[in-house]
Length: 416
Image (cartoon, rainbow, N blue to C red; front, side, top):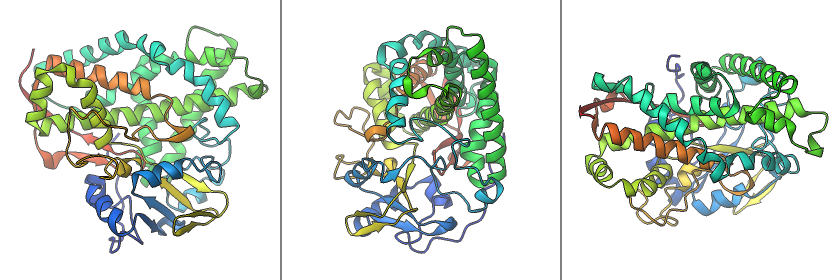
């Protein structure tokens, strides 16, 4: 899949009253915008794309807004401001037959019981069972590229890991990984600029999931889909297929793009910061804190809530129907919450970041994401400890809902 064609937008003249997540400079480096807004206008707004949307930039504000449930609702699956023509193409986009992905696209009580359904599969001990598969996968990927001396570390490595791990977890054919990548990018990345592509990919993906879940219902086996279908959950009675399709939707959509973006961002950082790279290569015990710092600094995900009623927050009123972006990346750069937030400190120990969200919708798959990052970075440093970015100008970044490198040319002088 090629990079999306980013449409030209009117230039931003005032970020406080007319911010634009699709601004080219914002996509490459949003940190200066957050820093300016945090001092001048901590709750920025925009009326672009047909709906007023708010952008908080302070850590405490983002965390507080994430806790206003259900008045700020997660039920709208179009979690980021999309062009108004999206609704014209797909008028049913926001109903439960659209991008249903509980628990993240649900409010209590559905959010509560669907989250309980998936938590056991993502507990630390359960996730450790997938470490060996992930290690073998990462080394196999490196085997296939190490003799070349260079690669696109986003496409050839980072992007290849989460789809195969999720496929393994759900019991899908690992050869589906490339198709998963196409669907996920079509929904979250390409679809951000091309509403027709978003609808097409979402519908294809939902049909695939529905067929897979119906097959497991008829022919259960040893995988997570079958396990979910076997659960005795009274609230799920009579709607088992819909619920499990929605949960699988979440696991694939939320579990792939986010994690490959984090892995890619980490490789980008170490490919451009040789002091940090050599320090981590010499001392693998730093990997846990280094990974947390990568998650903080390069937090990939911005979610959103939709006001179900007028909500007073500080000196602003969020009107019914307006959106609030859960700006977790911006919150993670707030100097009120982090000492020297613009410095990347791979040994940072006080690091209660919001990369995985906050409140009842905090990412249930955080343990899996951390394992994938730990294994992916560990395997790369074991095999390719000396590497660098080939050309900074060749790096491209995805923006919008999930930010991360999509082209990342890396080369290495020595390898083993």
